[in-house]
Amino acid sequence: MRASSDHIAVQVDDLTVAYNYKPVLWDIDLEIPQGVLMAIVGPNGAGKSTLIKSILDIIDPIAGSVRIFGKPYKKQYQKVAYVPQKGSVDWDFPTTALDVVLMGTYGKLGWIRRPGEKQKKSALEALEKAGMLPFRDRQISQLSGGQQQRIFLARALVQQAEIYFMDEPFQGVDASTEIAIINILKELRKQKKTVIVVHHDLQTVPEYFDWVTFLNVKKIATGPVKDIFNDDNLTKTYGINYKVAINQ
Image (cartoon, rainbow, N blue to C red; front, side):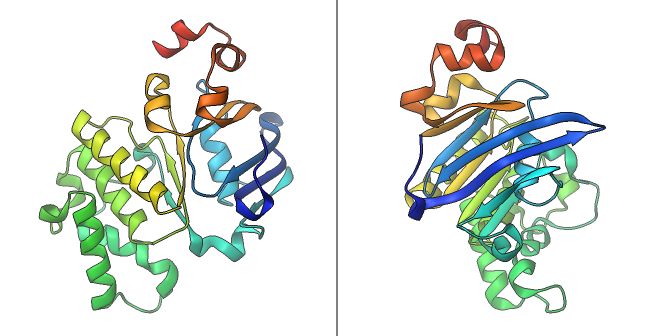
């Protein structure tokens, strides 16, 4: 399903990524409309995180191209925010929650200028939205897994981006944190932001998202949840029937 070219936030053409000559993503074509809350789903090893990292220019593809609002990522990086997997972050690094969120302002400030009162105010507002303002001076190593995830969500929010990429933001968090996060993501969608989430819980896809991409090295399908989240695409993606897949 194709979106109007005037409203495409992310366009991926013929993207192929390989590790040690083994394809991890193969010939991916993808158009993500502006203003959707999209899940990327697929089995372990399907290339979900690799797809995000390739779009963000963290991983170099062996073929293909990516455009953000019609331009290369390097020209549009200030419009993009990224929340990585929790396991990829050094949580023992000695810094406070507020300092982590302030790091989200560096992209627009540059690394030479230091954040001022304006940036600090924005960081405190982002912490409040994430429900973490009381923990502003807490060392991140002293926070629970769910609290740490909220801090990194606040760091993304302070960037005031147009597109948010999140790699399994619900992994290892409690129910209250999951609800808080999805409410923030839905609020971003109301603001016409584009939110792209690597997600593993198939049961919550219809409740949380309005757009979905099925991925298993190749793109299986992409489009509105109401149209393509069905037995056929789940079977093509996971190789098993829908009832088994949602209970994994």
